[in-house]
Length: 431
Image (cartoon, rainbow, N blue to C red; front, top):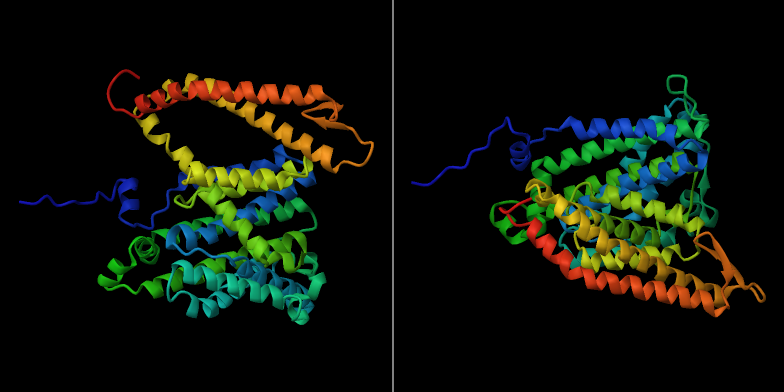
């Protein structure tokens, strides 16, 4: 007699495994409260602008993850859907009569529709297969539309792009969106709506079948599902939410240029998604937050921020394929076993020296860059709040010594950390 597996609908975890479209409100309420109070913590306009860019990137990264993480489709040109949606919103802004009758919060929907329309056209032939073929088609389409941006001036505005004014829209409950804080709450509302809709999409039969097509398209075909049409629907939905991100970008910055849809922007969103973790829904959110902070905050401190971002990306792909979210989720079994405290001391002994060693390496990189690229006679540089002469031997000796000692301590303590990790992940024993 075989055992029959049943699902208890009263348990949220089993509803999720069964593909239910039930939405647990707890995390979303916490996110809404956090979004509401952040402007009271970071009050200056520059911080609010950074957060606006962060939430726009979150929507775009989640949309991209609908392709890569859920559908297994690697795209090198997905920025065109966000860019086209943004350009469409800019033209709607400039259509004064129509825009004057339109509430501004509705504008991103038009960006989503234009992004979805382009995705339907491109997806009609690009989703016939996945893998290398899809990736190369996406790269070709991305390059083609990016080239058209300087040719079709009527829509893309040429090298200068297209600009507009969001304040010409119809006031929304008396709000004219003159202040950046008002735009922040508009974007925050949209990031909650878009993230919730994308999460619900992942629970639908199409979203579930996208996972099946990603893992084994032949078996999905054998069960009677068209892998091509599943990929097409996922592609179109992803284009819609990417267009929403483009529309929010237009509202926030009031200008779009060729940079919004070129290959570089597509590569950045790929980096963001991989950095956060494509195997988890919240992975792109973490990646978007981390990358935006690198791009904005770290770029104010050093010209080599892109070098550090690329190094972090390579290290993540090599050592943590699950991304930052995967690194976090690795600790869930440890907490369930009640053995998290076993890792505290080994982490301190290993990761703290590792951090010091990484800072030492970055100091050496900054010193080399300063020596090679500083103006003639400009020997002084400031690093870690310390001003010194980069041509003296002492700073180099200190940086090399700190790096070597810190990395040596890290290597010496690594076996103990490995043993503690194995013990913390083993059931039984003392916690």
